[in-house]
Image 1 (tube, rainbow, N blue to C red):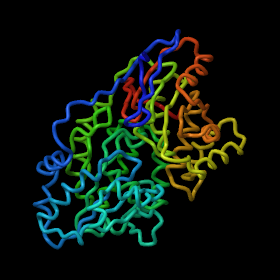
Image 2 (image 1 turned 120 degrees about the vertical axis):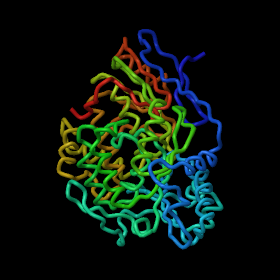
Image 3 (image 1 turned 90 degrees about the vertical axis):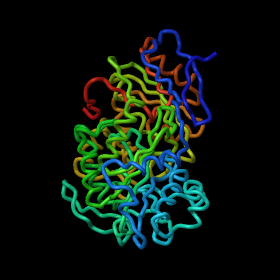
Image 4 (image 1 turned 180 degrees about the horizontal axis):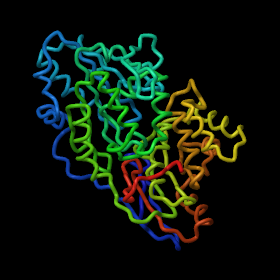
Length: 437
């Protein structure tokens, strides 16, 4: 019987054994944890005692307009289970459905198909409320100030013009912001393309912008500045076990409630380590959207020796986006021996390889090239095609056994990390990582 497992999908695991000569260093076997309430009950409890701000009942009255920004399908947030409890509260204080606007905070992501939107929001909500998918290039974006780096902050008009503004998201590890949800649903979720581009190119490469860190993180600090200027009134954040199960919800002030949520869920994700591995094997789960698959490589890089190997098990809803793959082609055609440095230099100029493409395509390119320069990267998948993986510069394997066999040729003896749910792990090596040196 195979001893170890990685999550391919929520209901599908891949099992495998370690070969002779490979010694296990860390195996973060996810546990579901004890969950005693339904999600709607968690939302009610959070809204009864919001952190750092007044209850909705004390802040709202009939006739006010409310904008609710929700994250898109690149995140695991159970939006359709959270919204009814919130909307019931709004109705109870006299807020009519016609005065509520739901905004999908896409940032620069590709819009969700209608069937996916229906699934995410639920039939009743979909049929009853006004729904907008944010357009980062919309002509009516409003300017609400400037980033600390100088560029204009442009924001979704429907959100900013509302009398009361709420966001819904998942407080899970994020490669640059430390954690997602809260203020991040506004910035970049509701921002203009040029605002996102400047923010991401300037702050991604600054010291402190790494998974799990918000205390000394300039990327996060600027996100919070934008949320304040956007007059974000309340956040609702789902909290997770390390098996990607929602065990509670936090609500309240964009910074104070976000920090409270991070404090409560951080122990679920943090793994203290004293030694870096030669090889790390992990799943990209819960990320299943093309450019998002690269995110868990960051935590792997934090606890793998330079020159070591990372094997990533990944699934995706559909083909990898051609514009993103083309970005890898462009970098390869430059002929540089150090494409990671080319991209770092591009960011320092506040520019992108694909200046009109979604920012997450460019971020996937950036992180992949940076990590390829430091580690041997292999993708294992039944859904990502070999040609797609190879265009991105990954080695490809159709099974864990094949991938392990190939990596073992270079690492006949190795100390190994295994992260069954790679998107829910935060390695703690006792010091701040320096990912781009």
